[in-house]
Image (tube, rainbow, N blue to C red):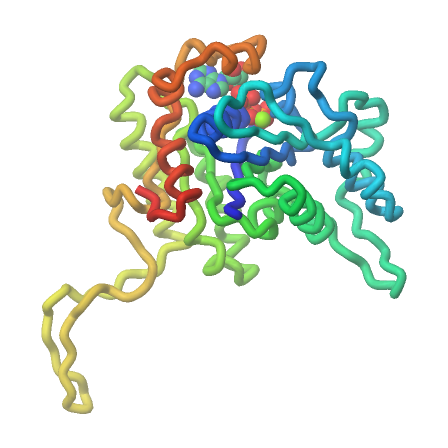
Length: 324
Ligand SMILES: Nc1ncnc2c1ncn2[C@@H]1O[C@H](COP(=O)(O)OP(=O)(O)OP(=O)(O)O)[C@@H](O)[C@H]1O
Ligand SMILES: [Mg+2]
């Protein structure tokens, strides 16, 4: 079951909108989609996909709190709802909080706490969350799980990327120094922690809300800066040997230059993780009062023109093909 995480260094870059459109599109193709709003500090995804009367009673925050006192199963059955936007497939949504969000802010202070076990050991929040995810996957049996992650470069945001067993991690990026400095810090942190190698092959940069004006130049700049960060951090250094080059080693044996070893890509390689999948700015999504209303009236062609590259990439990942 592929898990796909939608992440961004900065907030307000159209991540939840893109996730909702992706869920809509996958469901349109007959997929069973499970959507989780893990952006607990800035939730919004469930209201984008569900009208108020369909909001479930509880959300992820309630479960994380109840689980601390072994009460998680009491609310487990009442924390998912199906969207009425799905046609051929189904979209199941687990919100950050329930319809009655009474004590939400107070609860937020405790969600990331470890759980004290009977044997005195502690279970980290990330493994508690993984337990919830596995139970939800077992119950709902989705073809794919889409996770709206917390944004930023703090430890919790980083763990949402590295510890949720995601097959594909989408890194939303607006062009600008703040974005690239942020990603550089995050990647360097993974290098220091020794987890860069296991995570890097699942990464993919997404160009967030790409402007209409000078689109090609904008994307070229985005690609260049993204490449710089990947080359400096996650890509292996390329051995200075050309394919077909022949030489003799000190011990007398011969070598022939083949494919360069190591994990690296050309700047222009469209299949490279640094090469952005573009989500286009479109006036019909700017400053929306209700994304739910917008998606209810949208058609496939419109979704394709704004989110096409992202949806194709995600669909390929779900169907197990190579990403384009
Ligand atoms: N493709 C788009 N074209 C134009 N405007 C967009 C597009 N996608 C999103 N927006 C607008 O940008 C704003 C932020 O969108 P959204 O809530 O999806 O971002 P986010 O990254 O999830 O933000 P947050 O960090 O608050 O969760 C909204 O006003 C939305 O209507
Ligand atoms: Mg959001």
